[in-house]
Image (cartoon, rainbow, N blue to C red; front, side, top):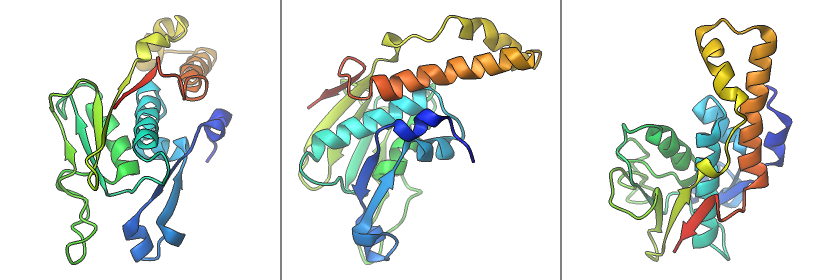
Length: 201
């Protein structure tokens, strides 16, 4: 599998999963994720996947400044309904790193490690996603302002040809390069830019 080279330069997300530790899946339960993991889950790389990745990273950094985030110990609430726009894609990416699910997650062992009842949609919050620590109640709300990172105008011109299957090889290659360049700009150049990924405590 060969990803675009910039994937390797994206910031990582490291968490500690008590269930992984309990079952011996990862030493001390520490799991390191890269952007490529989100792409494998989603099946594609786009601004939405990049934004979901960065919003999760920013919220976890805000909530766990001095320790690793606890996967499975985070409540996630999304402003939009699960069927609205790209909300489902965002939720899947967020769930990968937090472990939060509605009712399809792990049921737990003897009352521990239950991942259900931690993911909610259509919540009235002043942002896109609110992350809340189950142990302390501390919360962080995040918003991604992707409109502030516009793509190359040629993307819009090339998209119809690519969708219709009439693009030449050169046109398709250019479309892909321009599309991923916007993702790279968001993911690398604006990873820590509060004007793009805004966190509210």
